[in-house]
Amino acid sequence: MYEIMIQNILSPVVLFFVLGLFAALVKSDLKFPSALSETLSIFLLVAIGLKGGIELSKYSLEEVISPVIGTLFLGSTLPIVTLLLLKTIKIDKKNAIALAATYGSVSIVTYGAAISFLDQIGTTYEGFMNAMVVLMESPAIIVSLILLKVMEQKKSEAQTYSPKTVAFASPATAWIDKEVLKEALFGKSILLLLGALIIGLIAGEQALPTVQPLFIDLYGSVLILFLLSMGLTAGARLPEVRKHGIQLFLFGIIMPVIGGILGVLVGNVIGLSLGGMTLMGVLAGSASYIAAPAALRTSVPDANPSVYLGLALGITFPFNLIIGIPLYYQLAQWFI
Image (tube, rainbow, N blue to C red; front, side, top):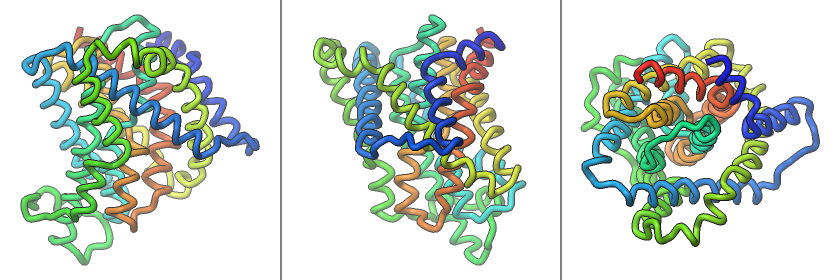
């Protein structure tokens, strides 16, 4: 595992992230225009969706039904696991729910880095895994918002999160605001991923001559630029995470490991390959900083972005990029 980890650290993708992180920590004047960061983000979302749709067109429903069920299971379960892990941390219920949505959803860029990692070491994976990224975006956000409504109904006077309200309340008694549901299902990242996936699925392999020069051949290079930008952002968020103490810092490391283990186990149960299990571990072990924060700004405005966004970008994202991805790969190897 040590050699794999070193190989991952020395990859251009990780090194450019570290460069951005270093630039932020030394307060360099290096900056990415917001429009450029937005463009790079849109590119990655469309590229992953298209590749997922084109690959998905090669498979029958019988071949993908088990991965779909496994992915939806993870997306619905991880928010509850997150809340239970937060039991030992004194944190208000709004921020607890925000973290549940963040850590139940998926990081598109971490997934992209995992694909680069697998390609670099020559490990193949199921093409339909790109489609699983789309499926895992929304369930955690919706489940987390349902849990918030349940907690508010059962113990509205509470100032801190109590996991008992999750265990004994029925989600059927909760409701979600129409605008919140709209954001969770049709927010920018989900719309682009799902739309590109459907287009790739409809067009199939005949779309390759059109999309390959931009969205496939240039994917790795664009990912490098985006990770340089992410390094700058993560470095700026680190001081905000430190304000909340060592427990929250440890949560940002422990939660992805727990999620990654669950993801690899689910991948093994549904019969995925070594690469597929690794990617399922990455999906479950990553934390969203695009889709979930966008929904949370609408649905849980009282939650502190410096907590859920700072933790996802400042702690979990670097951990996964450097240690997590090789770790999930090693875990998946144990099942081969």
